[in-house]
Length: 375
Image (tube, rainbow, N blue to C red; front, side, top):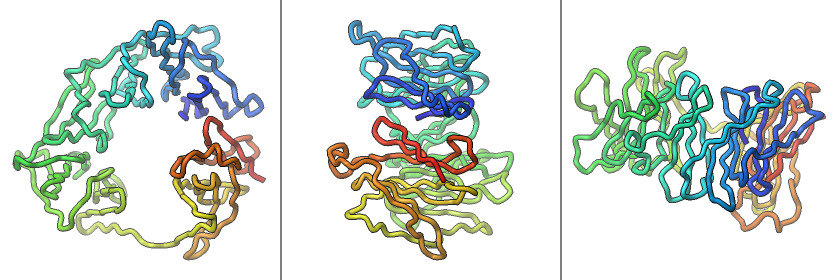
C-alpha cells in the first residue's frame, strides 16, 4: 500500500499482478484497476510528489527488467508511460521511495541476499543508477538507517565506523565519518542529535563497550557515555525533541523486548503504565496495534489484529483499563491462515472513506483491502 500525491491509496497485489487505485474523492468508482504498463509486473508504488506510479517489471520470456513511470490523474490521460531498462539479476521483494531534494526522488529496491539497488528519478522522469563506489550498502546492517531530517542525507552504522552520506550530483557521497578510539568497537546504531537549534552532532552506539559515543561538531574526539546496564542489539535509535522544538532533550533506544530512555536534566521522560488489555479469544496472537477513529463524532479507539484467530478486536480506554467494544473474524476458513505466526490480517487504518462524516475502518488482508463503513 502507498499514498499518492493527492492522498489516494494505491494497492498492489503480487498474486494478481495488478494494482488498484482507490480515489478518495470518487468512492463510487472505487477501486480503479491500473493495467500494468510493461509485461511481468513485480511490484508497484505511488510517487509521493507527483501524480504517477512506479512499476518494477520483468518480461517472462526475455527476462529483461524495467522500471516504468506511469502517469496518473485526468491530466495524465493519453500520456505514455516512461520505461527504463535496468540491470536486476534477481527479482526484488520490496521498494522504498524518498525525496532527494529539489524534484528528484530516490528509489531503492531490496532483493534477498543481495545489496539494495538504488536509482535517482529526476523531475524530467529520467532514471539513473547510483554509482556503487559512492554508497556501499552491502556492508551496512540496515537496521539503524536514520535520516538527519535533511532531504538526501542519511546516517548509517557500518560496524567499525559510522558514516553520514549526502546525495549530490546523482550519487551518494560520504560527508562525515565517525569512529571509536577503541579498536574492538562494533557500532550498531546511529542517529543525528540536535544539541542546539544551530548545531547537530551524532550519537553512535558501541555494542561491544556498551557505550554511547557523542560526536560534538565542535570537538575533535568523541565523548564516551557509558551505559550501566547491558544493552541488547537495538532495533532503533530515535531522538526525543524538547518541548517547543529547536533541540533534542532525550534519546529512545528500542530493542526487541525493552525500551531505554536517556535524557539530559532538567528534561524528564518516563513511561507510565496507564492501562492494559487481555484478549478473551482462544489462544490469541495480537500482532499489530493501530490507533483509529470510528463513528460520529469520531471516537479514539484501538484496533488489534489477532493473526491466530484471523480476527480484529476494537478496544477503548475506560479509566485504567482497555475495554473491548467489538470483535469479529475477518475470514473464517483456517485454510487461508497458514501456520501459526502468520500476519493476516496485517494492517488496519481509519478515515472517512465514503464522505458521510462518519469514521470508517479499512483492513488489509491477503490481497484485499476491506472497508467497514461506520454507522
